[in-house]
Amino acid sequence: MHDARGAILLSVSDGIATITLNRPEKRNAIDDATRIILIDTLEQVNADDEVRAVVLTGAGSAFCAGGDIAGMKARLEAPVGRVGINGWKRQKSTHRAIHTMNTIDKPTIAAVNGPASGLGCDLALACDFVMVGPGASFAMAYRKRGLIPDGGGLYFLPRRVGLPRAKELIYSARTVDAEEALAIGLADRAAEGDLLAAARSWASELTEGSMIAMSLAKSILNRALDLPAEQIFALGSEAQSICYATDEHRDAVRAFLERGSRK
Image (cartoon, rainbow, N blue to C red; front, side):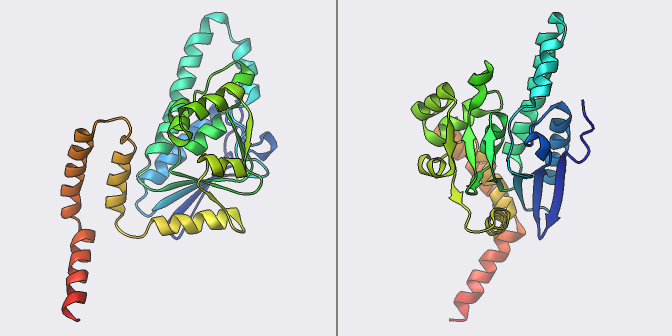
């Protein structure tokens, strides 16, 4: 395991946290050590009330090449009796990273600056939105390694592109360029000009208004396709009761009424 210090960079400016996968010499592949630092970083920004949105990107020419092949080599060399339990522990850690990315109580944008392959593709899809630069591409490349998507792709991809297309992308393991990604809903926007600046600008727009309302809405929307309508309504009722009591709601109502009285 390498020294992961510096493998994940974090900067915060104007309420926007930028998390950068910073192993450009490895095309930002994620190994066990990097995954631990990523989890810590995600939890840190989620707990920071000064952070209102998160942008995830990669250093250099790639967004994230997926799992580190060196880590896969170590897996092959492990004693046979340890392969199963080691894999189980690794899966728990991977799923914790993806779950944390997906459930952060703030808007999240993947600024995909280059190839996002395997786990890298999963990580992008775990964000609320995906913005692409001209060099962006996506590949569910797991089958080329004799694996299935284990970073959330089996869950997120069908919800973005539909079940038949998700099957095709996973079965074929082919590469999707930025133009096709936008056309099929795998990505949401293309950056005009500088990718990171465009992603941060979009993130800033998403922070306007009540962050409490946004966080509550996100927590329900993340389950909207899995629960029956009556449960979504019930969750919405509970969340709205919280919103009624917030300063943001009360101030907005007063401001609206004052504007009306001045007409």
